[in-house]
Length: 258
Image (cartoon, rainbow, N blue to C red; front, top):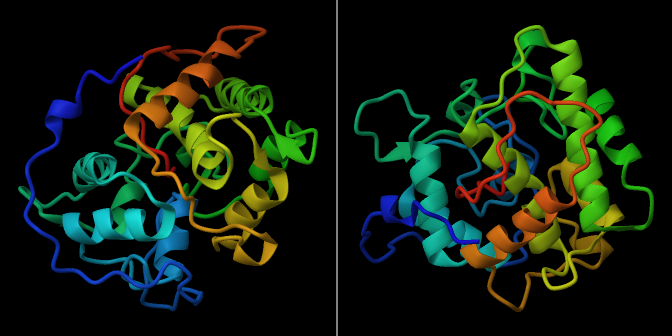
């Protein structure tokens, strides 16, 4: 299943940004730093792969950070930047700040795996109760495609049943699938569709790469095809007990970091 909108990616020049090493030390955000509703992007900023301030993130910084830290294909990094920069309210912006991503119903969406819906309060900070629900569907030490799909469905159903202003656009639905595909394919084994549960919990809860648990930068590059293949498997494993609202099964490009 191939993406239909890779054509939105634009040409870019050679990178002048020097990203840190692929085992960069971790530092908690300070009072003047900004963060996103996306645990992976926050993690990359905490490690210094992205600017620690969370501000002024350009296309080259995005591409270099994703490639250096996680071996994400540069064309996929470009695509992800194109989505992220759309959240900057400044017309014709060439950068984004991580807190731009908190603007509701652009990329940030209801039924997150680790954030409350914007209706209930700030959707940019980790919410233990929400994440506890997600974790309850990861029923083994190794998360499988089916477990990931079950957790996503549960969050969609809970959000739909409890949030009177629940909404999920086509793009929001695609991002929702992509976030699950990303933690499997980037932290785990993209071929088997599995990932150690402890690694995923560590990243979500600490916003830190799980180096001390054994994680290392993947040897194989992670491509758009990989993202779409895992996403398709997650969608195909869905079993909804009732309609979750507008959730479209489609092959739109998916952001892996929210």
